[in-house]
Image (cartoon, helix red, strand yellow):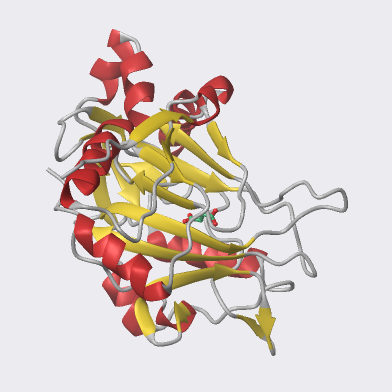
Length: 294
Ligand code: SIN
């Protein structure tokens, strides 16, 4: 039997990799293992020209682990409660998905004790400007490379610190900011109870490779345990800037049919909200469970 060797190239000269000629619907075990190994090392993989049904997306995701149901079930794809819709498209008063999600740097579900291992995002509709340039790019940065670049004194300073993660606070800020163009209901008490404030290590060990990664971000980290707020803010800004060095960022320019998978410890990401209706954006996202943070 002939085994096809999947190959990868650097995506846009960055740390991210792009799989060449891959059909994610029909991976053999060998091909899947090749992808998973590459993924565990690189943290961001891109696959172009895919043609996935929602069921294909779930099956692919399940090969990596348990697929989580999103907290905001009102934005699930109808009939598939493991698929979270990201979209600015309106149906009546509200959007069919979470609109302009992730528009500041973050790692998905870092506010949970057992955060998401990884996310997979599949594009169905991508907005364009009047000359056909795609809008709504997604940016990725390596939080592991960023840690490696720190000086010894920076590493020593942050070694034992813990960041305060506040999902509910971020949601409320965002809800108020977007109240006019994208009204959404506040979190219910039941939803809030599922995401209490927690602390996470500022430097997280990757569960598989044990690489050290900067695990605080501008979206969900509002402070550092035991540190005055002003000092914490200065340090958090400094660390965020270490992660997002401009020439180290991978900027994904979406086409319909693209799949991107990213590791939520090795990397951080941010979506650019430079479009608005009638420019429509619709993507489907799954999240694969991770292990509790060590
Ligand atoms: C996210 O998962 O944070 C949003 C990514 C995107 O919409 O490009």
